[in-house]
Length: 336
Image 1 (cartoon, helix red, strand yellow):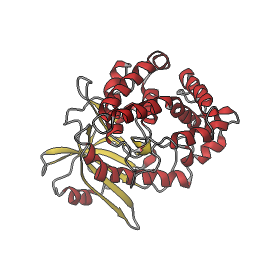
Image 2 (cartoon, helix red, strand yellow):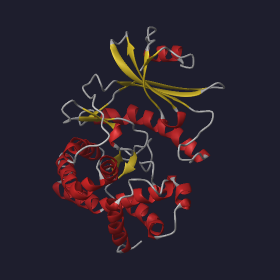
Image 3 (cartoon, helix red, strand yellow):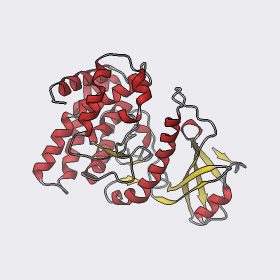
Image 4 (cartoon, helix red, strand yellow):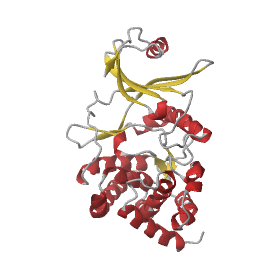
């Protein structure tokens, strides 16, 4: 949707940021979560290219759509945009030879009596050949995303998440005390801390995307290549946390029951191949075997979050429940 430049848009600031005084016409791509700003596309005559502007503004009032509107939630959300800026500045260039993502062109933050704003100016993935967006995929169509995740996890294996979230994802236990307190008593709540501890104690850590749902991937016309966006929750973790979250976001319950093993096999083939360029063969095997064993725990940890955040959520399905039962058996057999 092309829109006239609204009076609320800090046009002169954006023109200075892009060094383009002719910047004037904007297309609204989408509004950001909970009124935190807008994602805009605009054409820059100075660059002779369209760019994406992620314009973040701290709202006067914060209303979470599901009612989780605490001060902690507000601070976590604002911090997530600062993390994303840091990732694009310091980490994204390290991945440029391994997979596709947007390039940071410019960024700036201002805070004064009238407003607190952050702007990220990014290359437009549509013009780079990634115009496709999907809400659901077949198991086979998931493979390019799984390959992207494998490349990302391999590139940053053993990488300290300096400047990022120490623990990636938006659902890990330490960042969700309110939701945990609201959970019904039972095995899921009882073993929730053990799931979290088991994941964090894995010695083979990497960077995870942290919000690897299908909506955060852009697809080439033939669906064989993807680029990722939205790095607000990137940080430390193990690769199967992204894989479990992605598959749960994109496959139907029946496809999860029928095709999870095939999808995992594909991910681990890609991961092993990518890791072999950096690690000794024995360590590649150990990383893959360790993460595969913890796939059920990654699912159970997300189940714990959903059960407190939205206990009737459609993602709490038979597959998630089966994975949680496996995780309980696994952590019960381990010394805590």
